[in-house]
Image (cartoon, rainbow over the protein chains, first blue to last red):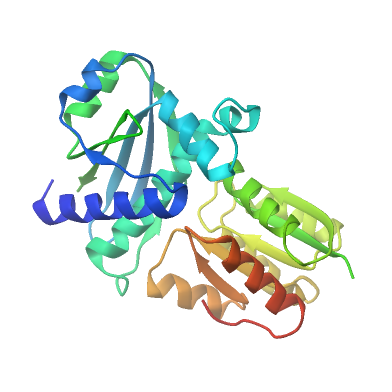
Length: 151
Length: 131
């Protein structure tokens, strides 16, 4: 992934995490994921822009619960937070993608986002996906990674 | 006067947030309807009295663009105000939706104040016609 795109994704990631969920991330190394015990979730969003692509956000399920709780104004143990945890990651991905596209390509260029998808990953898959990541953070103790496949 | 709202978004989280904001606003709430795609939303709009619609763009089955287009082609549905709430921010998209007659375009992530102020402006007749 090109340097400009990595920078744009990094900036947008921080901006959206703060505005959407009032959360903040610290830079993290590649080893944080492989060292983390637990299952992972990945949100992907396809976009059509001057260059088409797909944005990927990868995080542990615990992060998704916390994200959901923050966004909904409840506790991570609440049924509402748990029930919406994967959806919250999808929506976080959706917002990040929308802002990445206008940040990187400019708002004067037409673009289109597809509905986001989410899936649970086995540890091996998570490690593979994480290996492609260009943006890695620790958010409240959870490793979160993201990257964009640009065509 | 109590108002009926329809919130259309494939994200259950976003629908919950908007509904909570409306419930806590100064507006008197009649009924809060929701749908996760444009097609189901049109079914609700044709069946129930709706005073204001909040609609996402990128949804499965029928997206917000098509939903608003269908509403604009119906004499009665065209009178129902729509606020688009989307992560997309291209000028082309905003112009497209405003051209189809939506009252406002609000980019996600939004604040509770954004939702409340727009809803109050539109329902109390000050209009919006902006983003």
